[in-house]
Length: 531
Image 1 (tube, rainbow, N blue to C red):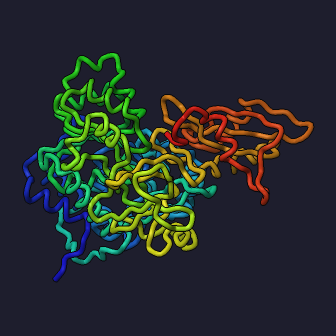
Image 2 (cartoon, helix red, strand yellow):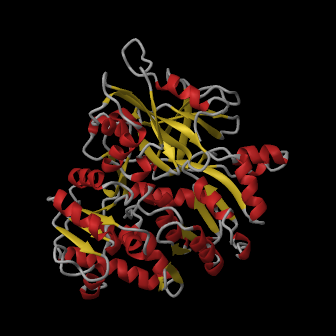
Image 3 (spheres, rainbow, N blue to C red):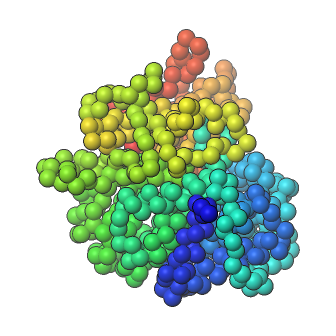
C-alpha cells in the first residue's frame, strides 16, 4: 500500500527519531519533538470534539508562536484546512477573507482581541472566536486554546486516511484583481516541496536551527514548518521581527540559517548593537521576497564571516520556493565577481520543478542574452488552484504551466534574473500588493476622477506604492486627504507612500491607462524595473 504524501508524516517521524531533542523554542517555552507531537495530536482531538469535519477551515489570527506552528500539523492531520490570516491587513480586508473562506473557528492572539471583536461583528459566518491564551472576553468562546488542549486526548491519528490531493492550507494573496484570492495548497504540494527544498539545501540536517523572521501567515513561511521538521532541526520562533531580538536569539540558540527580505537584513546588520553579538553559527542567509543586489550580499558576508548569502524565488502559488541561487559545483572555479553575480539572481530550478522563460507568443527566449520573458512554472509544488475561482485558476494555469507574471532573463546555466513584472503588482518588503486593490479604494474618494497606482523604487523597502491622481473638475484634494482615506480601508503596508496629482493619465487605444509610461519617470537610471 502506498502511503499518502502528507506533511503530517514529518512531525510523526521527528517524534520517533528526535523525540527527546528540543524541537521548538518560543519565548521562554521549549518543547521536545515528543512534546510538540503530542500537542499537535491534542489539537486534532480538541477540534474533533468541537465538531470539526473534513474540509472545514480553521483560521489563525496570530503572530509567530508555537501554537500556530502546531496548527500546521494538528489541523491538516484531521483533513481540515488551515487558514493563517495576515495580521497586517485591515479589518475590512480580513472580513472579506473570512466571508470568502468561511472558516468555522478563528483562533486569535490576545493582543489582537480588539481586531477579533471587530471581525466578529463583520463575519457572522464564523461560529467561534477562540483566544490562544489569557482570559477570554465575554464575546469569545469560553475556553482558550491551551485549555482545549489540556482536556483533549493525545491520541495517535491514522494519517493513511488522508487524501494527499486534498487541500491542507489556504493562503490569501494579493492578485491583479481588487480582492485577494485564496491559494489552495494540497498535502502533496507541501510534502514534496519540503523534500525538494531539503535536497536543494542539503544543509545541516538535524543540526539546523531556523529563526522564524518570516511570518507564519506569509507564503507558507517559505515552507519552514515542514522543511525543518522533516530534518529534525530546531524551530526558533520570533513573535514579530525586531533586529535586537533576532540578534539575541541567533547567538543564544546558535541559529544556522536565516531567511529574510532585504529590509530585514539591512535593519539587522545596521543595528547599533550588531557587533556585540556572536553570529558565527549562521552558515547561510537566503534572500527572498524581492531581487537582491551584489552589494547587499557582500555586505552580509563581510559582517557575518563564514556566512554564504544568496537569493531565492517563489510564489504563494508554488508552496513557495522554486529556485535558489546556490552555485553549481562545476561553476565554483568561475571568477569571484561572476559567482557573486550568480548568487544575486533568483537562482535555478529546484528538483521537481520545471521553469521556462517565454515571450509573448509562448516561445522560449534565447538563454544567455538580454531578452526578457515571462517566468512560467510546472511541477509538484504548483497550487491546486484559487479557492472557488475556477476562471482565475484557468487564467493562471494554462496548458499545465503556472504563469507567474514576473519577467526575467535566463542565462545558459538556467539561472533566472527577475527584471520586471508583467502584472501590476508591487512587492514591498516581501509583501505582494495589488495596485488594483489600492485603486479600488482611491476611486471611492469623492474628489477622484481617475487614478493609477504604480511601484516606485525605495531604499528601505525595495519598492513602494505611489498613487497618481486626477481630481474631478472644480474639486481639490491634498496628498494627506487621499492617504488618510486609504488608511481607513487598507492595511498600513498597502497605503501609498506618496501621491502625485496630474492633469490626465496616459492611455492606449483601448482607453487603458499606460502604467509602463507612468513608471518610466520614477525608474529612470535603474537597470531593472523591479527591486
